[in-house]
Length: 477
Ligand SMILES: [Cu+2]
Image (cartoon, rainbow, N blue to C red):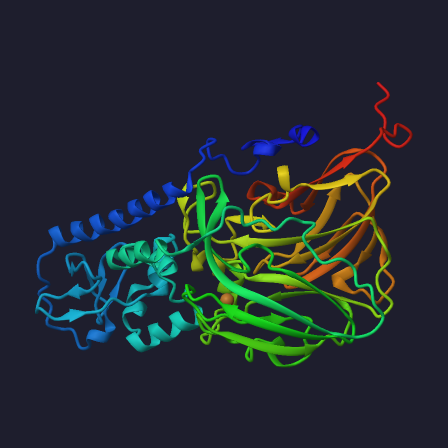
């Protein structure tokens, strides 16, 4: 990392780059403590509301269905009036002055108000419960307790559910899949049926030291497993959905030709499994991602990092190289600000605004640095399979100090590659394959050349060992 350290920014040197967590390393045991704080905090908030409460003297409510809890704990009545002293019970219900009890309604606009966006309260009041519930299903955060708390952190009852659920969550020490963790090239010239099993697993892992997130994954790491088949192969995929999951999951394979990429026929509820078969008709490097549950919400499942890749080799195979790597860029949308410690929940409003808090490389901001750096020797040719599975941002892939010899744009392994590219554009939901040979040893940084994203994690490191080569790069004076 020595070379990289010469690059500095407001967060410090490059190996400490974008997230200044003060060096705090939180143990796994401490996560529970963090969550206790979340839950107790929410509980105290509700108690505070109760202490302030007097019964609401409003007889003009036409329908109990038109009542919403706002993010600040106030209650919006059906006539648009805001009540600041409603009684919120410990199980998250609102008690009105006439003693009637209504269940709270999650509302997107409450979250918007919380995040500082303008809202139209009067218009808000006109929305029915049914409309609101429908919009939650279409646009909202899904039904994960963790995400619902993120959506309206005022609800102590959900906080309690959170803790209860968290005690049984899958904990993953390191969410990053090593860049060299992909299958070897295909060594056969006949088609075959390739069987793979993927498991949808909702886990808790660190975004960075002391920052935790409820990732949804395939097989507990990001990206999910890389599948490698030959053009013409039949691929049989069994999707298991972990019994601890809070959602149904599915897979939309971009390598599939057929409706929804298999996303409908692979719908799988928690604790169940589905098996689908598809024929890999066309060679290329393709991404796959969860298509969501029966309610859709594909973007939420992608934001939570349910994605991976499929290499469909052409019948003639790929040119031999010395090493192959897989690199995936993603986006994380959290309720906190960048570098906020503790448990960070998914923020649907940030996602809809397309403002990621972090860019991930194989699951974490600057995920492929340090021990996860790509290791190469001078003279070796490497092939990088790169996928962009953010929800919003096109990536401008670039390796500082290198020129890519061959670039198979957008994952097209059939056409002749582009040659000698400095930067290549990788669309969201797309991919590319690059071949690079290194001539000079040292530290190379691969970036999304929208460099404002560096502070949020959009970079990784290629360490190139070997003898100096002063003929190519040399400081004269
Ligand atoms: Cu999913």
